[in-house]
Length: 104
View 1 (cartoon, rainbow, N blue to C red):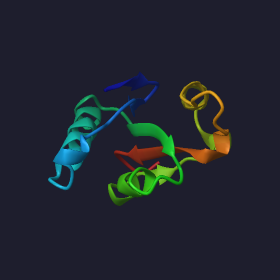
View 2 (view 1 turned 90 degrees about the vertical axis):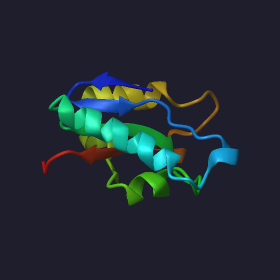
View 3 (view 1 turned 120 degrees about the vertical axis):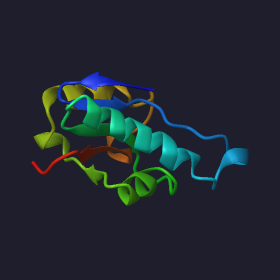
């Protein structure tokens, strides 16, 4: 599931059932989101995820996503980041990541 936030297509949720893992389905879904952001002429794809879960941030990093420091993130993405933090969870345990379609 994704939606536009400013110049980014924001990935709200990407999930593959464990019994279907290791078949490239997550990569295919992510590629479709990236392709959609390109076809819309957007700057890239944004998402927030847990920093320490071994199959979250590292998966996205392997696909060109980099951590975006909150201080330099567009306001709309910062707002979305904080709205996605589950109750009782520290903001520092989450990370905002961007994959830009072009340098900038």
